[in-house]
Length: 126
Ligand SMILES: [Zn+2]
Image 1 (cartoon, helix red, strand yellow):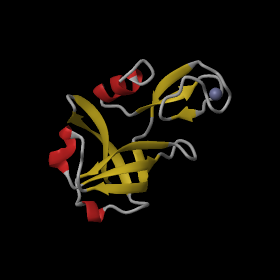
Image 2 (cartoon, rainbow, N blue to C red):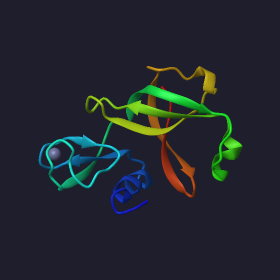
Image 3 (tube, protein in one colour):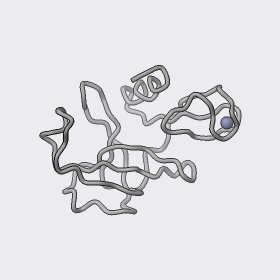
Image 4 (cartoon, rainbow, N blue to C red):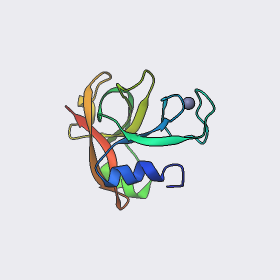
């Protein structure tokens, strides 16, 4: 967590998936950036999104080198396409079904799981 990503994690702590949004041009940005890639402005809000989306691409981790994830393997890391804007994606785990049940295009919704001591946005099959 840093100054740029703190509002995202604060939103997760409230049970909201919030995404950085440019106040000048309304472009959604994720991961958070210091400068809007669409218009160059530096004035942002973090706004809640629907939490609905679909699996754009994913990988199955069979062996994690991150200690806190080692006992979760196999698990799915995915880019989730969000309907709020073309090309807008969130990153997270897809859980609640076996990894081989995850497919590109599968509809998912956000939920929040405690990971590394904080509520973390992850996704599950709708
Ligand atoms: Zn902008």
